[in-house]
Amino acid sequence: MDCLIISGMSGAGKSLAVDVLEDIGYYCVDNMPAAMIPRFVELFMDSSAKYKRVGFVVDARSEDDFARMFKAIDELLMLGVHSSILFLDCSDERLINRYKETRRRHPLDVDGKGIVEAIAEERRLLEEVKLRADYMIDTTSLPSLQLRQHLTNLFGEDGGKKVMVISITSFGYKYGIPHESDMVFDVRFIKNPYYVPELKDKCGLDQEVRDYVYSNPATVEFSDRVSGLLDFLLPKYVDEGKTSLVVSVGCTGGRHRSVAIAQWLYEELRDKGHNVVIRHRDIEKG
Image (cartoon, rainbow, N blue to C red):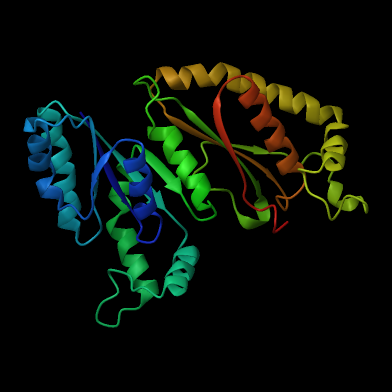
Protein backbone atom coordinates (compact mmCIF):
# COMPACT_ATOMS: atom_id res chain seq x y z
CA MET A 1 0.00 0.00 0.00
CA ASP A 2 1.13 3.53 -0.83
CA CYS A 3 0.18 6.36 1.51
CA LEU A 4 0.26 9.98 0.34
CA ILE A 5 0.02 12.79 2.87
CA ILE A 6 -1.32 15.99 1.31
CA SER A 7 -0.48 19.27 3.01
CA GLY A 8 0.28 22.86 2.15
CA MET A 9 -1.02 26.38 2.32
CA SER A 10 -4.76 26.89 2.68
CA GLY A 11 -6.03 28.12 -0.67
CA ALA A 12 -3.15 26.55 -2.63
CA GLY A 13 -5.31 23.84 -4.22
CA LYS A 14 -5.55 20.90 -1.81
CA SER A 15 -9.25 20.35 -2.57
CA LEU A 16 -8.56 20.12 -6.30
CA ALA A 17 -5.62 17.82 -5.58
CA VAL A 18 -7.92 15.46 -3.65
CA ASP A 19 -10.41 15.43 -6.55
CA VAL A 20 -7.65 14.54 -9.01
CA LEU A 21 -6.15 11.87 -6.77
CA GLU A 22 -9.55 10.24 -6.31
CA ASP A 23 -10.04 10.28 -10.08
CA ILE A 24 -6.81 8.33 -10.56
CA GLY A 25 -7.54 5.71 -7.93
CA TYR A 26 -6.64 7.08 -4.51
CA TYR A 27 -8.97 6.72 -1.53
CA CYS A 28 -8.67 10.11 0.18
CA VAL A 29 -9.63 11.30 3.66
CA ASP A 30 -9.83 15.05 4.28
CA ASN A 31 -8.92 16.85 7.53
CA MET A 32 -7.31 13.78 9.04
CA PRO A 33 -5.80 14.14 12.54
CA ALA A 34 -2.20 13.09 12.02
CA ALA A 35 -2.13 10.79 15.04
CA MET A 36 -4.96 8.71 13.56
CA ILE A 37 -3.27 7.98 10.22
CA PRO A 38 -1.56 4.71 11.27
CA ARG A 39 -4.82 3.39 12.75
CA PHE A 40 -6.74 4.20 9.58
CA VAL A 41 -4.08 2.51 7.46
CA GLU A 42 -4.34 -0.60 9.62
CA LEU A 43 -8.11 -0.62 9.07
CA PHE A 44 -7.58 -0.32 5.33
CA MET A 45 -5.08 -3.18 5.40
CA ASP A 46 -7.50 -5.40 7.35
CA SER A 47 -10.44 -4.56 5.10
CA SER A 48 -11.71 -7.06 2.56
CA ALA A 49 -11.63 -4.23 0.02
CA LYS A 50 -8.25 -3.77 -1.60
CA TYR A 51 -6.92 -0.29 -0.92
CA LYS A 52 -3.68 0.05 -2.85
CA ARG A 53 -3.30 3.82 -2.57
CA VAL A 54 -4.65 6.11 0.12
CA GLY A 55 -4.30 9.84 0.70
CA PHE A 56 -4.72 11.91 3.86
CA VAL A 57 -5.09 15.69 3.97
CA VAL A 58 -3.35 17.14 7.03
CA ASP A 59 -3.89 20.87 7.66
CA ALA A 60 -2.06 23.36 9.86
CA ARG A 61 -3.61 23.80 13.28
CA SER A 62 -0.66 23.57 15.66
CA GLU A 63 2.98 22.55 15.73
CA ASP A 64 1.99 19.43 17.67
CA ASP A 65 -0.09 18.25 14.69
CA PHE A 66 2.98 18.03 12.49
CA ALA A 67 5.14 16.44 15.17
CA ARG A 68 2.45 13.75 15.26
CA MET A 69 2.49 13.53 11.48
CA PHE A 70 6.22 12.79 11.35
CA LYS A 71 5.74 10.22 14.10
CA ALA A 72 2.90 8.68 12.07
CA ILE A 73 5.21 8.35 9.05
CA ASP A 74 7.68 6.40 11.20
CA GLU A 75 4.86 4.15 12.41
CA LEU A 76 3.76 3.51 8.83
CA LEU A 77 7.26 2.31 8.00
CA MET A 78 6.96 -0.23 10.82
CA LEU A 79 3.74 -1.44 9.17
CA GLY A 80 5.58 -1.86 5.88
CA VAL A 81 3.70 1.02 4.26
CA HIS A 82 5.52 3.45 2.00
CA SER A 83 4.48 7.06 2.58
CA SER A 84 5.33 10.36 0.93
CA ILE A 85 4.35 14.01 1.36
CA LEU A 86 2.82 16.25 -1.30
CA PHE A 87 3.11 19.96 -0.45
CA LEU A 88 1.07 22.60 -2.28
CA ASP A 89 2.45 26.13 -2.05
CA CYS A 90 1.38 29.52 -3.35
CA SER A 91 2.54 33.12 -3.00
CA ASP A 92 1.04 35.22 -0.21
CA GLU A 93 -0.30 37.76 -2.69
CA ARG A 94 -2.12 35.11 -4.73
CA LEU A 95 -3.53 33.47 -1.60
CA ILE A 96 -4.90 36.81 -0.41
CA ASN A 97 -6.53 37.36 -3.81
CA ARG A 98 -8.07 33.89 -3.79
CA TYR A 99 -9.61 34.46 -0.37
CA LYS A 100 -10.96 37.82 -1.52
CA GLU A 101 -12.45 36.20 -4.62
CA THR A 102 -14.14 33.38 -2.69
CA ARG A 103 -15.01 35.54 0.35
CA ARG A 104 -14.04 32.65 2.59
CA ARG A 105 -12.19 33.04 5.87
CA HIS A 106 -8.73 31.58 6.33
CA PRO A 107 -8.84 28.74 8.91
CA LEU A 108 -6.26 30.51 11.09
CA ASP A 109 -7.94 33.91 10.83
CA VAL A 110 -9.45 33.97 14.32
CA ASP A 111 -9.98 36.71 16.91
CA GLY A 112 -9.62 39.44 14.31
CA LYS A 113 -6.12 38.33 13.34
CA GLY A 114 -6.58 39.17 9.66
CA ILE A 115 -5.69 37.29 6.48
CA VAL A 116 -2.08 38.53 6.23
CA GLU A 117 -1.15 37.43 9.74
CA ALA A 118 -3.05 34.14 9.34
CA ILE A 119 -1.09 33.27 6.19
CA ALA A 120 2.20 34.18 7.89
CA GLU A 121 1.38 31.95 10.86
CA GLU A 122 0.41 29.04 8.62
CA ARG A 123 3.60 29.40 6.59
CA ARG A 124 5.62 29.26 9.82
CA LEU A 125 3.75 26.15 11.01
CA LEU A 126 4.29 24.42 7.67
CA GLU A 127 7.98 25.26 7.27
CA GLU A 128 9.26 21.86 8.42
CA VAL A 129 6.63 19.99 6.39
CA LYS A 130 7.68 21.85 3.25
CA LEU A 131 11.33 21.01 3.87
CA ARG A 132 10.52 17.32 4.26
CA ALA A 133 8.09 17.10 1.34
CA ASP A 134 8.78 14.57 -1.40
CA TYR A 135 6.77 16.56 -3.94
CA MET A 136 6.31 20.34 -3.98
CA ILE A 137 3.99 22.14 -6.41
CA ASP A 138 3.70 25.92 -6.55
CA THR A 139 0.23 26.87 -7.80
CA THR A 140 0.77 30.65 -7.84
CA SER A 141 0.41 30.91 -11.61
CA LEU A 142 -0.65 27.34 -12.36
CA PRO A 143 -4.14 27.06 -13.90
CA SER A 144 -6.42 24.32 -12.56
CA LEU A 145 -6.13 22.30 -15.77
CA GLN A 146 -2.33 22.28 -15.60
CA LEU A 147 -2.39 21.38 -11.90
CA ARG A 148 -4.65 18.46 -12.75
CA GLN A 149 -2.29 17.36 -15.52
CA HIS A 150 0.75 17.71 -13.28
CA LEU A 151 -0.80 15.63 -10.49
CA THR A 152 -1.93 12.99 -12.97
CA ASN A 153 1.57 12.79 -14.41
CA LEU A 154 3.08 12.48 -10.93
CA PHE A 155 0.69 10.00 -9.36
CA GLY A 156 -1.18 8.28 -12.18
CA GLU A 157 -0.43 4.60 -12.50
CA ASP A 158 1.88 3.69 -15.36
CA GLY A 159 2.46 0.01 -15.13
CA GLY A 160 3.13 0.47 -11.42
CA LYS A 161 6.10 2.70 -12.16
CA LYS A 162 6.46 6.38 -11.33
CA VAL A 163 7.69 8.36 -14.34
CA MET A 164 9.73 11.52 -13.94
CA VAL A 165 7.75 14.63 -14.83
CA ILE A 166 9.86 17.41 -16.34
CA SER A 167 8.37 20.89 -15.94
CA ILE A 168 9.76 23.58 -18.24
CA THR A 169 9.11 27.15 -17.08
CA SER A 170 9.94 30.38 -18.88
CA PHE A 171 10.18 33.49 -16.72
CA GLY A 172 11.38 37.08 -16.53
CA TYR A 173 14.17 37.97 -14.11
CA LYS A 174 12.43 41.27 -13.37
CA TYR A 175 9.65 39.22 -11.73
CA GLY A 176 11.94 36.86 -9.83
CA ILE A 177 13.30 33.35 -10.33
CA PRO A 178 10.68 30.60 -9.79
CA HIS A 179 11.58 29.31 -6.34
CA GLU A 180 10.58 25.73 -7.20
CA SER A 181 13.35 25.55 -9.85
CA ASP A 182 15.83 22.67 -9.82
CA MET A 183 17.84 24.09 -12.73
CA VAL A 184 17.93 27.69 -14.00
CA PHE A 185 19.28 28.85 -17.37
CA ASP A 186 19.89 32.55 -18.04
CA VAL A 187 19.40 33.44 -21.74
CA ARG A 188 19.82 37.21 -21.45
CA PHE A 189 23.04 36.94 -23.49
CA ILE A 190 20.93 36.42 -26.62
CA LYS A 191 19.91 39.41 -28.77
CA ASN A 192 16.57 40.73 -27.56
CA PRO A 193 13.66 40.79 -30.07
CA TYR A 194 12.04 43.45 -27.87
CA TYR A 195 14.22 46.05 -29.61
CA VAL A 196 13.06 45.00 -33.08
CA PRO A 197 9.98 47.18 -33.77
CA GLU A 198 8.03 44.54 -35.71
CA LEU A 199 8.71 41.91 -32.99
CA LYS A 200 8.30 44.00 -29.84
CA ASP A 201 4.58 43.27 -29.40
CA LYS A 202 4.88 39.60 -30.32
CA CYS A 203 6.04 36.78 -28.04
CA GLY A 204 8.33 33.77 -28.16
CA LEU A 205 5.50 31.53 -29.34
CA ASP A 206 5.22 33.48 -32.59
CA GLN A 207 7.23 31.97 -35.42
CA GLU A 208 8.81 35.31 -36.38
CA VAL A 209 10.24 35.70 -32.88
CA ARG A 210 11.44 32.09 -32.74
CA ASP A 211 13.14 32.50 -36.12
CA TYR A 212 14.86 35.69 -34.92
CA VAL A 213 16.06 34.10 -31.67
CA TYR A 214 17.36 31.00 -33.45
CA SER A 215 19.05 32.99 -36.22
CA ASN A 216 21.76 33.59 -33.62
CA PRO A 217 24.33 30.73 -33.74
CA ALA A 218 24.86 31.14 -29.99
CA THR A 219 21.20 30.23 -29.40
CA VAL A 220 21.54 27.05 -31.41
CA GLU A 221 24.73 26.03 -29.63
CA PHE A 222 23.26 26.87 -26.22
CA SER A 223 20.11 24.84 -26.90
CA ASP A 224 22.12 21.86 -28.10
CA ARG A 225 24.35 22.00 -25.02
CA VAL A 226 21.36 22.17 -22.64
CA SER A 227 19.72 19.28 -24.48
CA GLY A 228 22.91 17.25 -24.21
CA LEU A 229 23.25 18.05 -20.51
CA LEU A 230 19.71 16.83 -19.87
CA ASP A 231 20.32 13.69 -21.93
CA PHE A 232 23.14 12.93 -19.50
CA LEU A 233 21.40 13.98 -16.28
CA LEU A 234 17.86 12.64 -16.66
CA PRO A 235 18.75 8.93 -16.45
CA LYS A 236 20.94 9.68 -13.42
CA TYR A 237 18.07 11.47 -11.66
CA VAL A 238 15.68 8.62 -12.44
CA ASP A 239 18.17 6.09 -11.04
CA GLU A 240 18.26 8.14 -7.83
CA GLY A 241 14.47 7.97 -7.55
CA LYS A 242 13.77 11.60 -8.51
CA THR A 243 10.21 11.90 -9.82
CA SER A 244 10.05 15.55 -10.85
CA LEU A 245 12.43 18.12 -12.29
CA VAL A 246 11.73 21.83 -12.79
CA VAL A 247 13.88 23.47 -15.47
CA SER A 248 13.50 27.25 -15.67
CA VAL A 249 14.65 29.46 -18.53
CA GLY A 250 14.85 33.20 -17.89
CA CYS A 251 15.28 36.40 -19.85
CA THR A 252 14.62 40.00 -18.82
CA GLY A 253 10.83 40.18 -19.17
CA GLY A 254 9.85 36.58 -19.78
CA ARG A 255 8.08 37.25 -23.08
CA HIS A 256 10.47 36.71 -25.99
CA ARG A 257 13.80 34.87 -25.59
CA SER A 258 13.00 32.63 -22.63
CA VAL A 259 9.64 31.65 -24.14
CA ALA A 260 11.16 30.71 -27.50
CA ILE A 261 13.96 28.64 -25.95
CA ALA A 262 11.76 27.01 -23.29
CA GLN A 263 9.28 26.05 -26.02
CA TRP A 264 12.08 24.56 -28.11
CA LEU A 265 13.33 22.59 -25.11
CA TYR A 266 9.82 21.36 -24.32
CA GLU A 267 9.32 20.13 -27.89
CA GLU A 268 12.77 18.52 -27.94
CA LEU A 269 12.14 16.56 -24.73
CA ARG A 270 8.60 15.65 -25.77
CA ASP A 271 9.81 14.28 -29.10
CA LYS A 272 12.37 12.16 -27.22
CA GLY A 273 9.50 10.53 -25.31
CA HIS A 274 9.87 12.29 -21.96
CA ASN A 275 6.90 13.17 -19.75
CA VAL A 276 7.11 16.94 -19.97
CA VAL A 277 4.85 19.94 -19.31
CA ILE A 278 5.45 23.61 -19.99
CA ARG A 279 4.43 26.90 -18.40
CA HIS A 280 5.19 30.43 -19.64
CA ARG A 281 4.88 32.23 -16.33
CA ASP A 282 5.42 35.84 -17.35
CA ILE A 283 4.44 35.84 -21.02
CA GLU A 284 1.59 38.30 -20.41
CA LYS A 285 3.73 40.58 -18.24
CA GLY A 286 6.88 41.03 -20.27
